[in-house]
Image 1 (cartoon, one colour):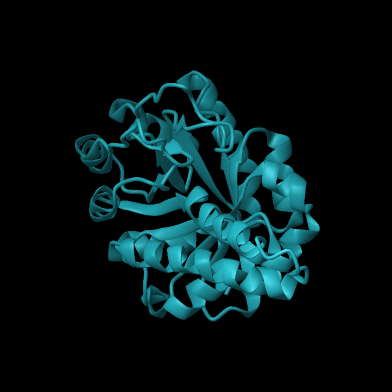
Image 2 (cartoon, rainbow, N blue to C red):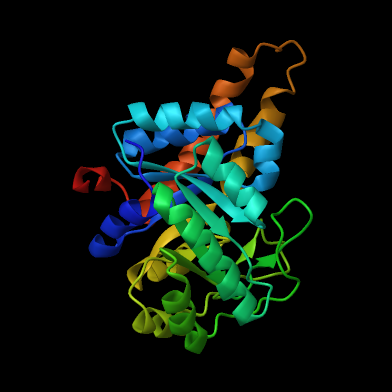
Length: 286
């Protein structure tokens, strides 16, 4: 069942759970995410970053749309961290049902103007829009882009931004970073800041950089009103670590010999995240 983000997260918002947004950049990752979500009867967001879209090409989106239409669970196909109107228009034209426009590094007035323009383009064709206030950190070159230093979301800006832009969801910066944290860095969420933001607006909130944060903090964020959590590095790390093990056998060369155990390894992580986000079984609510 293919849905847009607004309709998908409205149910999560009303029932206190978070929908996982898994970044997919290959057929194997798509397969694993869909299988895990179907098994757990969880709604799911298939997230594709512009860099990932450039790698897999727009034809890959048609495959994702087909999987979503025939699925027994609600599925949204979402552009992750679109950086320009060109990214947004390409996504809308090739079948995404939701787009993020990330102008968070711009001054507030520019961020509002850009997001409002995207809303005016997307909403007439039933595509939902995610904006962002504050900046997410980064952990290294293999992570998605982020700021060297986290700029936390200012609660005073949240009401202004949401009312001026009409965005359907808001990504907030409360202490996460993209990627896997190195051993000398300890992630920590500012949950009191999240409480303050939640008290100001009544739209679904989004947590980027959800990989490698303490499970207790993630679960607390869900209880405090986060309805979408992005997961990329955790599932990819599980998949490719298993690939390295499998490919230690120099004889194996067929994809259907190499990839099934790798898909199962990432599915184990996906299933855990679905449980952590309180999303298991929630497909029945739609």
